[in-house]
Length: 199
Image 1 (cartoon, rainbow, N blue to C red):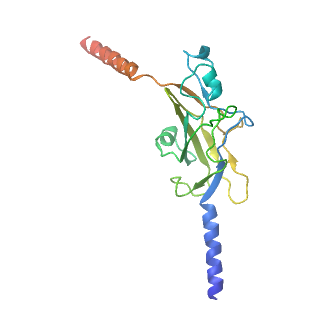
Image 2 (tube, rainbow, N blue to C red):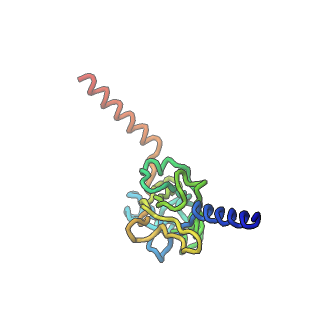
Image 3 (cartoon, one colour):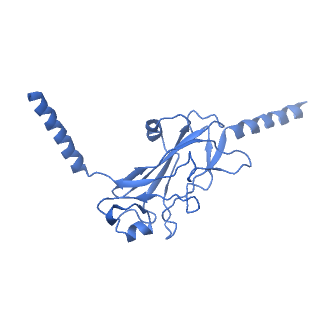
């Protein structure tokens, strides 16, 4: 009887643990047609260019191979962009340092998600996922992957990147305004307010 109880308990624990975790494929590449890009009106005629070797060759600085930090944010489906962007990233890596692959990154070819690290996730419901990236002077958020369900058991990990609806299909870094530009903008706004009050 005791043996039967122990076996039953282990079976229940196994089911619960499988419900509490899953995996996704967070490894973009040429096969899915999605790279991390960088765009700057002052560089390369303003054309969007792959980070890494291609960006360096085009005249960009600080977004070459192994120079862009990528973070992944995940919350249950229905989360707002503001909630996603203010959540704690689940993983952070650098883009690939290799020549041809330097426009991509790999947060584990199948990154495991658990109920412990995704707030409010029950292990089987859908997830919304975004990424942020930053190089020297450049920053950007990816498009949002909407309503993805992490794979469990022997299932193939759910892909995050691609051209299919619901997946991340764009990721462009743009120049971060210099502090002096932000200060000047603030001063201009304050001057306008003061001028309107005088009227």
